Image 1 (cartoon, rainbow, N blue to C red):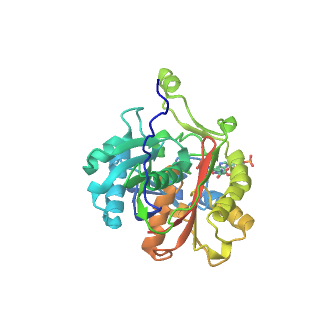
Image 2: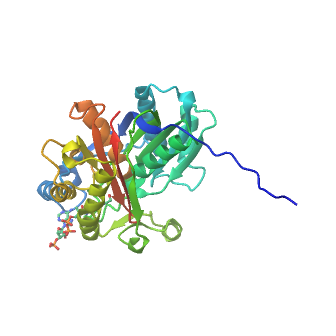
Image 3: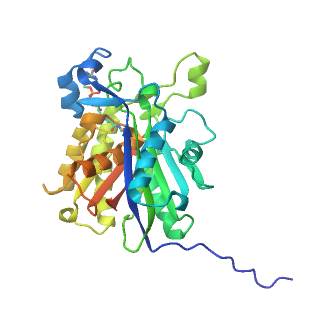
Length: 334
Ligand code: UT7
């Protein structure tokens, strides 16, 4: 008879984690509002006033979720200074991979020549990148991975209903990637995240089987007003919670990079959170449109490249979208 069970070992990792490099890749084709208005009944004035979008980036035919994810990842890895051989996990947040398996993450890992990394996709819509950053942080700190590549990639224009003037002008295509690795000081704050499956019918994609069976392309649908209200109330509160969870006061924050869904949502969040004028606000949606899981890392790269933000700055990021789901945290910029 056994008296005592054996004690198993548990993994242990670094005290903290941080982002070491970020890279982005945008759709090759620039589509301005004038061109958009040859497709839908709208105007440059309406689109700019309601969303802030001036132009968006669409993937060209030769661009795929894989090619864009690889381009962004190569930049992020090079900038991180981390030996690719030391990256042993890949998380890809996407709603644009057009098969259930194998995952896009395994193809990204293979395309980068990574040897035997853990690899999986995440389905958390526009919150996917922030979900990935939080999981990567936990993996590095619990020692289940040394360094984690986190990618957000979308080609939503291949799932856009161009007869729906309420959504067609919103989307942009792109990829953004970061490398998360071990750190002696905190570089990724506590995540504030959640979901509300009761609101699954607020933003949704057609059931692919049903769509194909009826000879249609599966497309995205959205109750824009409902999403807008949720984002400017509940999500604004959660954003403030993520700042608090990191132990920062609004005046201690350097940069705010919300999911690039609508400049008016960003404005409303700013009013609710009382962020001081000194905080640099991402407005990347103007040139990019809404690129879902890719929007935050792409916007992060743009702020660092323009010099508006600098390495070491504290940045509050929050993603929110179909689910409904959300995730936000404070990160130290690479
Ligand atoms: O990334 C995931 C999260 N997504 C979001 O956060 C999106 C959140 N929602 C939004 O950003 C906004 O709801 C939209 C930008 C999508 C729409 O803006 P809105 O101010 O909520 O417009 P609306 O749907 O309330 O429509 C207002 C009016 C309507 O006309 P009436 O009924 O007032 O006469 C629409 O028919 O604007 C009309 N409209 C348009 N007019 C010109 C709707 N789409 C267009 C258009 N051009 N493209």
